[in-house]
Image (cartoon, rainbow, N blue to C red; front, side):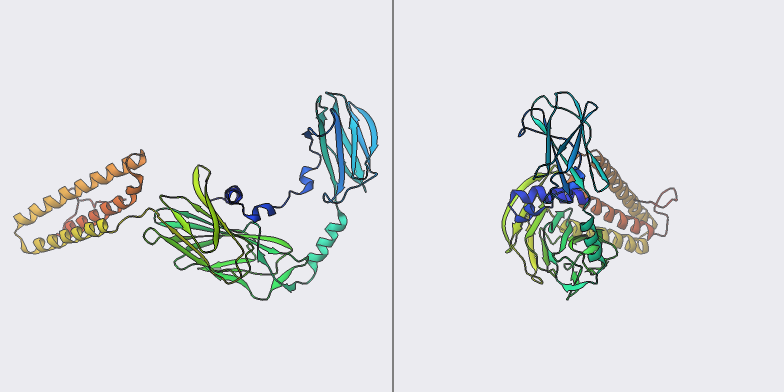
Length: 408
């Protein structure tokens, strides 16, 4: 699953169960909104309001001259104490606003004056002092400190054909103003049975995944270091169990589980959950409180679709019996009996092969029970393998034309 979809899914679903972490989503950088007209209804008709700030919304620039260019005509208006300059324009007029802050020219997009309501705009100057402080902090030696799992930390589970794809979305946050190195390494072991673990997003120079061991190397910069780990976990019958400790305090536990079959999620650490649609699927969104460092998070998912192994074992036993009979008759029976056995094996092979072809065609066309496709295909291949073995035990080619039979 792509990272952007995972994040969108966690926001949409966990908002439904009221997790506090959703409210902690960071505001966009004001620079991204600079100069973009925004029609509003809270201003008098035809009023244009331009707010000038430095760096962030808390740093207004009062008494700053703003040049309004209306249909080619220029007019200067100074900002008030809240950093806003306002002008009433004619409906349909072509409007643009420009200001210069310490040799940095800021200008809005050109827009049309509204007949009703007003237009708000934001012009954002660079905070050079803030950038200099950030550069100095980045160059300073790392201090001893702590990190927490905060904000967007989520555990996402997607069951799929007797296994599950599991994603850890870890928002490793350093709340200090300088880089820190935790006293204990930020590393943990994935659950028993986990396979195919890999880093899906995060700083490659800091994250090391070897087998089931995950290590995120410090120092950690101020703010969030986002790391996404993905792996596969086998299903035991109709159940998947996850027990996972993390080396840092988790501020809020959030879990997303794709609803497959009659899946149910239980955990002593989850206080609320709800089923929600997202991306054409149903997901279980669950949330809980804080989880201390090194305390295992315990998740149990039951009611998952699974297939009994007995048909497979029965088919295997019958195939073995066919092989043994072929070997015995090949050595003990008369040529006539051996020929009869070979005909039976060839007929059996042809029947199995035709059934396999029919199964593949139905699967490609979307016919039949899709959940039975994989186990039935496995049974047919196992039986074919043993029929070919019996034919080869006769010392002759298993194909009447002298070519070896192949099943992909």
